Amino acid sequence: MSSVEKYFSHKTIDQLAKKTGFVKRSRKLPASSFVNSLMFSACNQGNTSLPDITADLNQQFSIDISKEGLHKKFSGEAVRFLQELVKVQLSKQFPVASTELKKHFAHINIKDSSKFSLPSIYNVDYPGFGNYSKKNGLMNLQYEYDLVSGKWLCIELTTGHRNDQLDSKQTIGSITKGELYIRDLGYVTPTYLKAIIEKGAYFLNRMPPQVTIHTAEKKNLGWRAIHRRFSKMGINTLDLDVLIYQREMLPCRLVIEQTTNEEYRKRLRHAQQSAKKHGVGLSQDHKIRCRYNAFITNVNREILPIDKIRKTYYLRWQIELVFKTWKSFFEINKVKRVKKERMECQLLAKLLWVLLNWQLFQSCNRYVQVDSPEKGVSPLKFFKRCISFSGSLRSVVLNRLSLVKWLTNVFLPLIENTLCEAPVGKVTHYQILDSFLSLS
Image 1: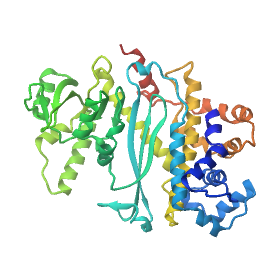
Image 2: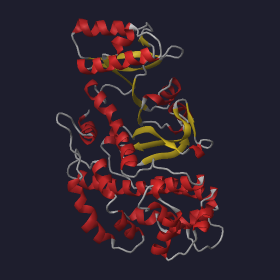
Image 3: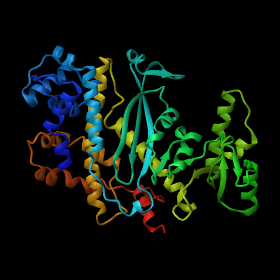
Image 4: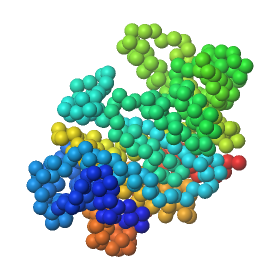
């Protein structure tokens, strides 16, 4: 909590406001009050009016400002100020102890994006594309965080036109030696994978469906041949050293496992419906491909054996839980027609509020994992409850409530009721992470 108090301090915020031009001289609306009121708004952007914000400023800070005056404060400088404040918060997150995991990977970085529609007035600045939000605007959130430290690595509001593939190309410079990158299929390109290999980093991904596969001797390896191996050998999994892509063949491991008959039939029905919709046939190779899960990685077998590939890849689903909390509990996708800069400021402020609570979430995990590294706090359970203590947390940030009293009476009692529980027959992502400790 010491970092929360330090980096959400009035002094830090006001200095950044002057640096970005949001505050040019002393005004009756300090930047810290502006941020605080937007962060701790009880409603989503779609249900928050200017009078709501002015009333909050008056009640919390005795600041009397008209809705017209507040409207003018939502400017390009205000957006830049909040963007910079998000960057500062990202850079100042406190570390989470994970020295054992770092024996294998310096960081385990998971990245994905989430899109949501905006009112049609934003379709110039945030245009939709294709059949996705064609008539309305489209917001695209690019988000990446590290499972080892728990830190957010980036959070960006971008247009829908900057898709995952383009983002992957534009962020190659951030790839770092010794780190493991787990991403959705949309980010996987030859350029991306080549950059990871050249920089001494690691990847683990599903294999894109149209990728050509070659043996180590550069002979073509089709799905019919792979299927014959499974049938002939009577096996359920296969781990091969292969070369992928056609022009510039990239070396990696290809790990293949059979799906259940139920999952196969489900995939086949989906593939047939898609083929019919587009007026094309379904190849035999495609039908065979539906029988298998296929993963590609350059992590060696000693660190990541075949039986841990799928479970490790499914760590990526944690980011889906994050997006679910943002939309279900924080309702960041509920946006109404207002001045563009106001919409952006309110979204950025809400992300700051989420980041503040994420640091508290990490504190919970550290507390739990001191004695039980395989246990942890459920993001869904925690963030569902953090809305209820938002008001008291605000009092801590404003130095109106004792931190010790808040921790004792509000925060610590949460932990026992928010522990992560695995569904029957499955394991939690904390257990998967802890399993790395047993790898030689």
